[in-house]
Image (cartoon, rainbow, N blue to C red; front, top):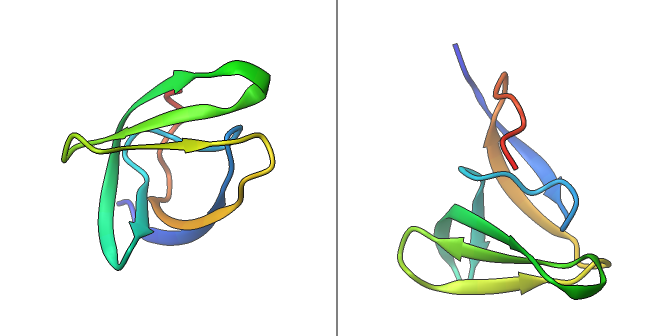
Length: 70
């Protein structure tokens, strides 16, 4: 059984399905696009997007026991 856990999310560790709080809203990562200089463009289930640069650090929620699906 998967249990939600709080994790640090970076451009290298973000996974589809991660939940990130942005502006007080919980957004689910639906897709990832590699950008220049090691960043990632996160596309959320709502259609919104956010670019994480190589040094960006966020806190999010991930279901434990999930494999990496970048």
